[in-house]
Amino acid sequence: MKTYHYSSLSASEIAALCKRTAVNFDRIEPVVREILQQVKTQGDVAVQALTQKFDGFSPDPLVISVPDLGDIELSAEKKAAFDRAFSNIHAFHLAQRPSLLSVETMTGVVCRREARPIEAVGLYVPGGTAVLPSTVLMLGVPAMIAECPVRVMATPPRKDGSIAPEILYCAALTGITHIVKAGGAQAVAAMAYGTETVPKVNKIFGPGNQYVTCAKMLVSQSDAIVGIDMPAGPSEVLVIADETADPEFVAADLLSQAEHGADSQVVLVTTSEALLAETLAEVARQLETLPRMEAARLALANSSAVLVESREQALAFSNLWAPEHLIIASHMAAEYVPGITSAGSVFLGNWTPESAGDYASGTNHTLPTSGYAAMYSGVSLDSFYKMITFQELSPEGLRDLGPTVEVMAQAEGLEAHKQAVTRRLNRFAQIKTDLP
Image (cartoon, rainbow, N blue to C red):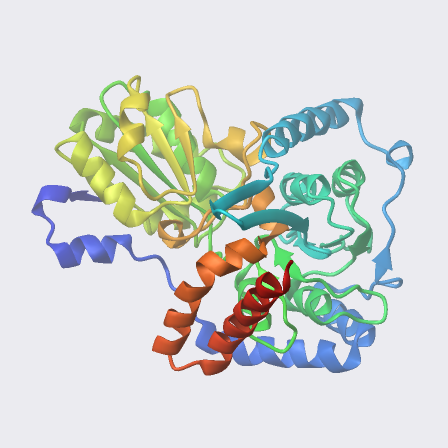
């Protein structure tokens, strides 16, 4: 990890430190566009052929149903772990249920907002270098609570064409309605456009590699008419640590993100030179024990440690960096909270590892990366709803509000807008005149 002194950096150098490794969409976009077009025009045949090409297996059938929980072979220990994670994630997201909002903005003018579930959602669960049942829970639980009628999960099959039992178990827990045995851009295309067997969805959720990310962004701007959760890139963490932090814990937190892959980024921000030195030494020691050592080593080579002079500087840099995961490694973590303005999810105190949020604390781990936490939120229950507004005016309400609308419509030169009000006001006046 490269070390920097914050106070000696210029504004342009700080901005450069906040930049992430750019995905070369110019290189991969033509490939992804061709995949999207193939799936759009050829449906299941294209998805199967592309899965054979990229994953070495042609899924037949392409879409399967979720087995019953009792039919899934999994150890009691794993089932208990997934059950507890499900319970915590369910509890936190259930508490997010929107309430009916109704406001009488003036006498006779009532405005409401009501939630409606998105009818069909696509949940992408990566499966390249690791099996990720936690992502099934993070996407499937809020989709279930929101009562989205169609919940399609796409995930790459294993080499023998099967889906890992851990994935199946979490899919069963969350009521997934369809499993697409494919990953990559072809799976995104299948959900976006629909095929003979893959239902077309209205919104696609979930992380993935650069091809998946590119595909999500392209279909969201295409004639597929499909939304996506957020732009997403490689996983990342920023740790703010003061003199009360534990170097062993901080190093473990940094490595827990670095092991995701060479394109992951980790940042340590600290007010303590002693802690910085101890943490870097601890990172080197712990790195040698990891099965994914080489991937973590490559990520660390592109990562940074920043020495700051104060809590205010630490927070200023963190907010500029806008991390996916922010860890406050301090006995006084609560004192940092008011100064946090941009972060996907925050982990407070020395006993709160980022791994807890990744798996089972209850918060969602599908979060904005690459600085998008400055303007995007992570996935929540709200992500699976459409919020529809309603308004209802009584004749008296229109009588009082109508002149305001008439003046504004006339100011904008929209006579038909004005007449839609004026004709009603005239009718209302006529009715009042005709009354005995």
